[in-house]
Amino acid sequence: MDALAEFHRMAGEVRNWGRWGESDELGTLNLLNEEHVRRGAAAVRRGAVFSLGMDFGSASPQGALDFRPKPVHLMTVDGGDESQYAAYGAKWAKNAAAGQIAGFFSASPFRFNDDVIIMPLQASTQWDALAHAYYDGQLYNGFPAASVTSAGAFHCGIDKVDVKGVTARGVLIDIARYRGVDYLAPGNDVTPDELDDALRLQGTTIEPGDIVLVRTGWVAKFWETGDPMEPSSGLSWRCAAWLHDKQVAAVAADNVMVESLESGVEGMFLPLHLLTLREMGMMLGEFWDLENLSADCDADKIYEFQLAAPPLRVTGGVGSPVNPIAIK
Image: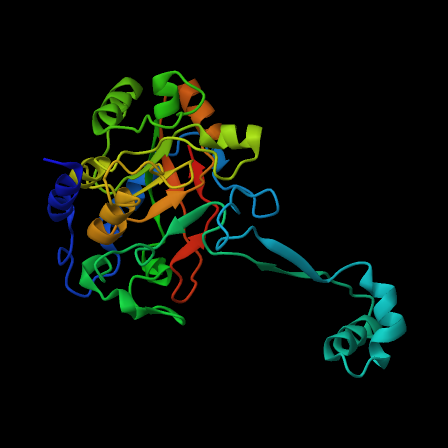
């Protein structure tokens, strides 16, 4: 069977459409319930906290794609404005903001700073919403792709995730350490058998409702080169069946796309995205910094933790920045 035919066969096998009802827009997050939240909390032994988020700024790990530029951070009020607003603000009738701020500054000793950020929702550490990827005109659960308009995603947007909060037991699978390399070079995608073997060596098992984090070592390589499109390997598209069989609630990795740019399926770009987001209804996390967590897990040989990674409630968003927290 050629890879494209195998892809379509696997798509049918892992498809969760209708599994949680015809109107479902949560997908595999339905696997999370109070029991799974408690199980995540029970994984906390020491109270050690690890931030898994990367910076949002000019050094952020994105920007190679013209339609996804780096964040632009602007100050709207800052400390240098105090003397200028005092001198000119109240007299500048054509600038309402200046007059308003001058009024604040003249009323009392209170001073403040304000800022704004302009950036893609899929900048730096992020979740892909189920509405992010599709083919043949359909999103997850058969919703029409045309329901994502210039106003946002009517179906399967990131705002639908709010009811779950994305808090669960997390499990790190450290593939880079398993292979004994600093990072996974291109052309060496992770297979389902490797995931099983790495878990066995770590002494860890995957339980239904877990969120799986896969370390490829990409972040450390990015720190060396500063290249936001630093090539690497990721999960093979065949890992979709593994994620489905293990009943994983979501999967995230430390690289650009969870999978690699080398598709492995002729005529199909990012096949794992399509199998997870569109067929399974499984969110993908990208650009997660797993370096400190990995070192700690290697030191104490405990690869489970409580994971809290709620996205922003962006109405109709097809992705969201996130600062995930792992607690051991």
